Length: 324
Ligand code: NAP
Ligand code: F7E
Figure 1 (cartoon, helix red, strand yellow):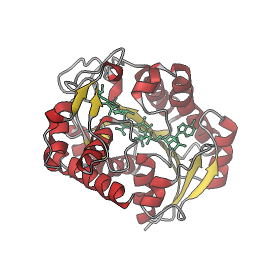
Figure 2 (cartoon, rainbow, N blue to C red):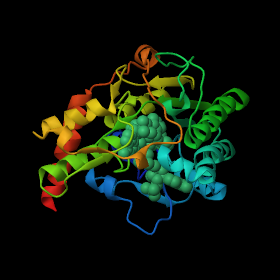
Figure 3 (cartoon, rainbow, N blue to C red):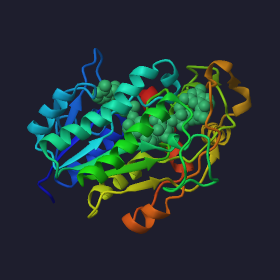
């Protein structure tokens, strides 16, 4: 057990909730930035039964002064920057907000760490969306980037800012280039959860159809619970570095849907409708990560198959909907 302090931006998100659970289990005092919202955003922390175990500090990624105050109040040894406007689809509607929160926001956190505790360790939530129009069949830490959305562009700025602060100020700053990871706590706008929620509703007679966009897109999907372990492992290394975190398997959206419908005993073709509305101005057709470096240096391996993940999510949605 440790007596370290952690500060998490994006603590109310999917990864923030799982990472909080992991760090609490290791004895960390966990602090999180709570951005002002008019709705209740603590449901994930409640589902994991840890809402009362974390310390929430008011702040916003676009407000450097709030981040400096949070650094001072938390006395953070480790800072995990998970906060973001994370939905790729919305980034074309809100490109400037996405740039401010995901790009400049990361720079604000780096500055807050540098000003208050330059010896603190920093994790940046980078993304496979930076590979976008892929320049290699399987992407690793050496693959050139080619982002395809305002989200990918903003995240690329944050990624290079992390590398730059490591090189300029000898900061322990790491960038986790994570491929898609999902869970029962995934936001409903992302395709896996949209599918498992809809399949559960169809199964229970609450809905008839599921409308999707490009089901030929391929993604390398893993389980968020496995991926937060890689984040923590990165900050336990002697030096900061960049790591790809992925399963090394890629699957179409279509096949992922078949798994969900199949598990519910439903026929996909009777319910699936393709809707132009869900196509994107520029698509990332295929992503496939190579996690060899994370395997070798962190000893990290994914533990959950896509089939097990989709079944876990579908069962959780069936339980939630049955409870009303
Ligand atoms: P998520 O569920 O969408 O969570 C995003 C978090 O950011 C929420 O807690 C949200 O707060 C917070 N946030 C948004 N705007 C903010 C602001 N202006 N100031 C402070 N906090 C703000 O995302 P996730 O799936 O957990 O992903 C975590 C991080 O990893 C994100 O940076 C994402 O871009 C990145 N990432 C995700 C994946 C993936 O597949 N999940 C893959 C690669 C990288 P509210 O709850 O108040 O909205
Ligand atoms: O889309 C296609 C869509 O929104 C996956 C974020 O966590 O992972 C996530 O970004 C694919 C795309 O995730 C629908 O066009 C088809 O090809 O679940 P998604 P994403 O865009 O890959 C990366 C790594 C991140 O960093 C992001 O933060 O599915 N698709 N039909 C659809 N997608 C959605 N959302 N809805 C549809 O109806």
